[in-house]
Image 1 (cartoon, one colour):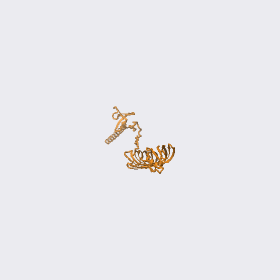
Image 2 (cartoon, rainbow, N blue to C red; image 1 turned 30 degrees about the vertical axis):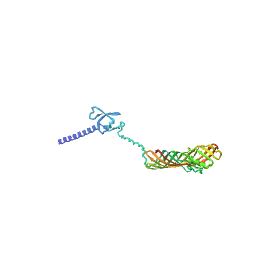
Image 3 (tube, one colour; image 1 turned 180 degrees about the vertical axis):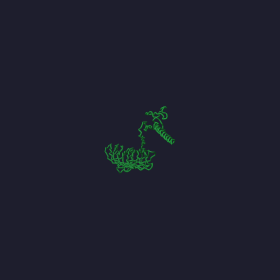
Image 4 (cartoon, one colour; image 1 turned 90 degrees about the vertical axis):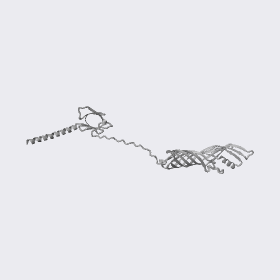
Length: 336
């Protein structure tokens, strides 16, 4: 009986010792600080000091050993023996509260608007400079001596600058055109007709004279692109500046005996008048922004000239001269 009592006491003492050892182990585990590095490693330590940039500590298993220093940039957090935590970020290296979670705000990439290349068949605008032939038609080119509106104009030449802009890259837009045309006067034919219509007189007219027509017009624009080609139509109206040249005349009066002669001069006159017209053109894009253009155009005006004949008998003649010109031109330009 006594033996069993001693055995019971021994068992109780063993269990008590085991419990005491477990309590000591638990308490000792909680009596240490844990430094968790950014790579995930843990250091059992006794933290001595936390500065702005470093953490000073002693190893838990060597409390009497040397002090160590670790950069805060390499530390994620410290869990202290009392259960509190310091959490660090690599950006600021400042202590955070135990329950504070740090999130880095993701910076949204800045979206830059990139110009998309225009489709091949997108309508484009252009500015072109060119020149070509100037063909008078109708009364302007007539050499009929019985028609007072005959202009006796001959084939000449001219130049132009033209700009057209589609509205929001649609097929329709506005266009501007500035052009000039120079057409010589067929004075030989005019001289023959004048002599036929004035029997008894013989005249000699200056031959190197020409009409000058300058036009400034604007209007509507239609374009239809097909790959590298664009087919354009423009209807225009505006101002024409028409000039009749100064002409020297030598006249012999054969009705007198002896015959008399006189030097006459028709003074130049410039008139401003309304003009209208248009053109059809074909453009070809040779490279990205540059093009060549072929164009057929028309301009029509009706100036009234006041011509002063000075000499032996000064007089002023009012003459309306219909002016219609067809241009066949080519040019080079920039399109956008």
